[in-house]
Length: 112
Length: 116
Image (tube, rainbow over all chains, first blue to last red; front, side, top):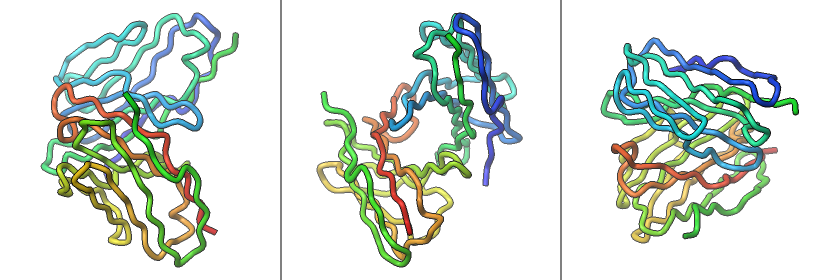
């Protein structure tokens, strides 16, 4: 099936550092979404991107919809302990199915 | 406002059995989507229901089915369980159909199914 390549798979950083992760695909997507999942919980939507080139911020989070529509990145500035978790990208294919395809996730660990 | 609720939270079944999972969306939401999450395959879309109709379906075998009731509550059924069906099953609700502009999707905590 369709695949999103999300990297890195894991990150170990110091509190206060900036974080960057991205997703790429050989397919074109209509929509890019970024989610965060805490242990034992469902994913929570962080940012939604609907237009190629769109750059959107949500507090310390910034995400961009790549101009080619095949990639997206998420940046977290000045990381804090509660940023720990697994971050997923998801893309919506332009074909009629409207199904979501998810990346494999980036596990973020923060050393205080 | 209550969030998305899923029951049961944990379930243990044996191969060959069938299982029904339930999802109650946020009040007023009409779209319910189901996802399977496993360590190996990650998060995969199963299907979406909107106003009691299945709108979209992922690449899962016919053993996976669902339905939605007039109050927007949804059930997912898996028949003839296989070991590989062990996973966290998540449902998510939204007001409008999946992925309309500015239509945020809220996830429930999931049902963890273990097949022995």
